Image (cartoon, rainbow, N blue to C red; front, side, top):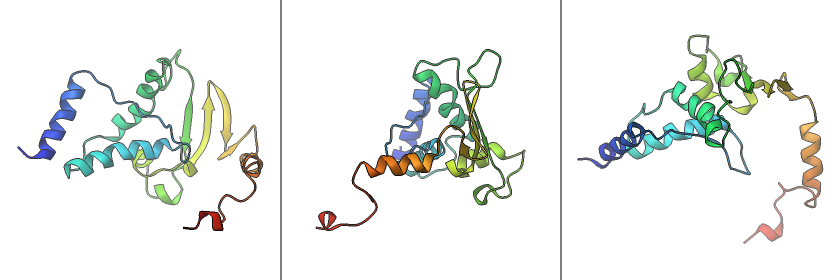
Amino acid sequence: MRSSTRSRRRGREIAEAGARLALGSDSHAVIDQFEEMRAVELDQRLVTGERGHHDAAELLGAACEQGHASIGWPDAGRIEPDAIADLVTVDLEGVRLAGAGPENALEAAVFAASPADVRSVIVSGRQVVTEGRHVGIDVAAELREALGAFGGDLFSHTERNSP
């Protein structure tokens, strides 16, 4: 039996045994749930050499409902009565999502969107991002101030970084 077939079969056995895929982000460099969703499919593709292990709905569930449940918030990550209202809207008019329509918006968002495509965010029923901008703070100004605490421009190449 080929290695990729064994690997794919093990993944199916784990899922059939009741394991649920849950996604989150623990990165300090990039916090991007779109990237996390895509990585699951792309990594499985790399291991097996085959496409189509996870569909968009499964990956979105892993990032939303199962992701929330895995950190002890079973009432979040879905849209229904009495669930915590955490919602995100994505602009389908950007270059990454050009041509997407209602019939394939989910697939487009999961497999092509980035945080730059997020138009609004609601957390526990409170609007925190509108038209792509945070409503409570000036994010760029806050980042500049925080980076200033490290002595200036972190993106400059200095001699101390040279071999």
